[in-house]
Length: 169
View (cartoon, rainbow, N blue to C red):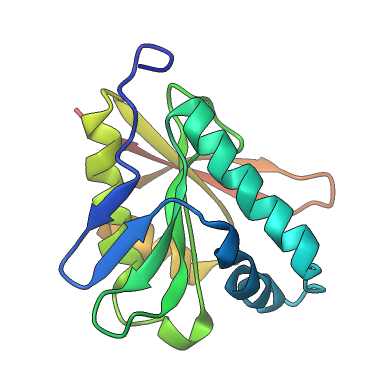
């Protein structure tokens, strides 16, 4: 138990996907995913340190983002899970990021629904998702998985961040 909650399941199987805790070997594909954001790719060493940090934080907090592998193809397509982010350990955020090549195939929705189930099993009552107002694809996923728009905040650069909420009760 962490913070009065059960530990999240770090290995989840869905119809088409296998979600699991980060391994050091995930650094290479994670670099490529970060590169798709339009920013400089981290070095392999920096990516390795980051994925180890993600794994350590998950084991310490009892929640975390999990890697997503397609079951039949066997390829890594992104990650999805629970993070503290802008929220709290009691009411964490759901986060997901997938390679552009697999967008529009329902994988983010499938993975996120599995994570919602895992979050509920820990005893949590509410989840958040914070999304830049420009990210229409993420809003579509959030709508499909039962999140509702709650309020907005603004970053220092003026970008609107939309807070979305889902009750798990």
